[in-house]
Image (cartoon, rainbow, N blue to C red; front, side, top):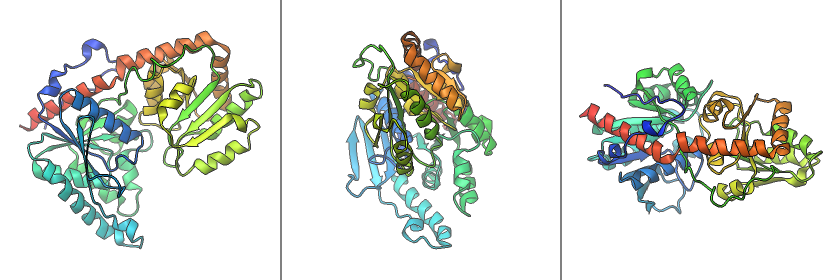
Length: 410
């Protein structure tokens, strides 16, 4: 099988963007998500943005997902896409006893494949988001139906989607092998994600690189002109499986807050580390200026903030970083591969070494003290998103990929 590679440069020039006609030549696409709203994370939000953009461009999209909330409708029409939810029983969670995973694997595969297969008639591509046991079931249905199966991977550096599966108990290596065998094409959002897939055993020729996308004019029309940076924002999960160095951010803020009496910090997100982070902030002298609302809608906080900070130890491609750039915020991020790629080697935002409190404090302080510098990075961030990460361009790249896969398999 031949896969057309679209490993475009990090800066996607307007002349490089494929025509929307690529989307029009594909009949329809079915997407599979191991979880979807009301459970919402970065991967789920990105899947919905892409599906909405594809539907707006004239490509019907159906999203298939397990029904994790009994109150969610089985079928939902939203933004010109259709969401189909199906019942899924996880024996490992219902009966957490030794050995149940051996029975759970074939049972999960059967349940998902049975739910997905009826939706594949006349479909050219099954697009899976994130690799998992459930994804293997969807991919199995796709292979049986003769539909090309692709999966967008999200993890990078020393871990990968397949590496995470391998660590999930004694049966993990078998499930990872199954996923690797069933997925025909992988989409990597950054060079680091591509490298992680290759280290996990995926052939380079089966990997296509397409970034995440965001609305390039997101929140910029409502934003007041940036006069002075005084409100810092972290937006994302506070979870043990999302490796973000929040304590270093809190410490850097605390030291700056002792000098700048009007600055504030918001840590917006939830997860299993929320209470631990709350305890960390409560020990700070500036705790009254640290907001910790838990899960919340991102738009109001992006409008509230003057600067976005992403203290990643590892990353795939941060949707929150893209949204902050599109919202016209100057950004500070840890200097790791994916952040460096998004921020154009520091031209579109400040990069600081991982776990370097002094460097982070200096970067935050520089934006507090120099409004012209903050405005420069805000403009560069907006331009970078519009040039490289607009959801319309990303959807067009996927349309081109879908068409290529459809022709290859014809």
